[in-house]
Length: 368
Image (cartoon, rainbow, N blue to C red; front, side, top):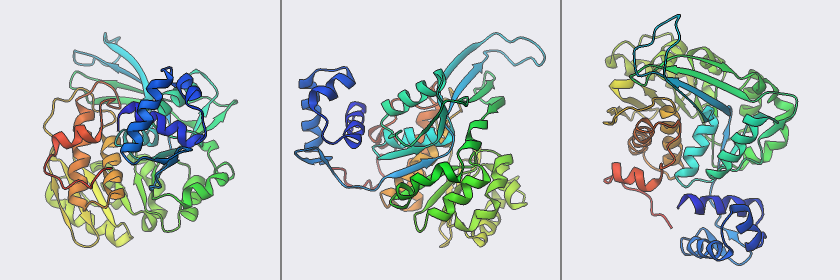
């Protein structure tokens, strides 16, 4: 689907009876253009008939951080304790929010649960996220809190040198405020969450998830420790080298140590482990014994921020389609490559078509 078609589907999910003229006014296009897009969506099987009856397909709930990313980068080596000339940009970010945007760009129906302040950053986040095709109706808008902000500094190689996050607002996303989303969670095809959630929110998540698979992003070695009590309830865990070693207490200095580390995680109850090892690629392991390596994607790194979120989105999309783990990992690596080669945290050109061009030999499910 095109970005415009995803945007139209988002509006139709919120109001299946919306008149075409009102939809045109909301999108800033003509009524005839809306009619043309709706006809194409009907041909693709996304709309089943009059009254905009939408095709029933499993949706993803993304639960966790949504923040404004402020990125500073230099073309010369960073000098500590000095003012460094460079470029500064702002973009929508947050691990769960980024994953949700990437999933929507792949064509998935994704609902975001998070919290933002009723301020300039918060309103901008909601607008850009909805424009990408994500359902943001379940994001809390809090008038007495500031939207999360993530400040990162990058050297000329694109890698992050240091970052500061101000995410106090997520402590307000507690069990009481999450309770109205119980049914949304229970009927999801898959849940993706991040370790930005408070211990209270994590306890609520695993109490309500039932049999729905939970894919968890560890975020950082510090925040990954919050997941320790819940390892037996997590279906898929995606740590990096430092986070995996910190959680398990096992070394991961060389690729040869990865299988023993994966065995430890499977003993705790993790069904799928995907460890990102930077230049060494990705090691994946399933509790059924399936395991292997997927090499790092060949691409020019413009911005490393957001690649892990794109990787998780690809894993979740592959799981929704019933793809075997090795194929889902290869697709996820393609999503990461597209993101690494883009200056923005989330590549606006990410799509299933773009991924298929990088991985033409994968057995993709038939798309209507």
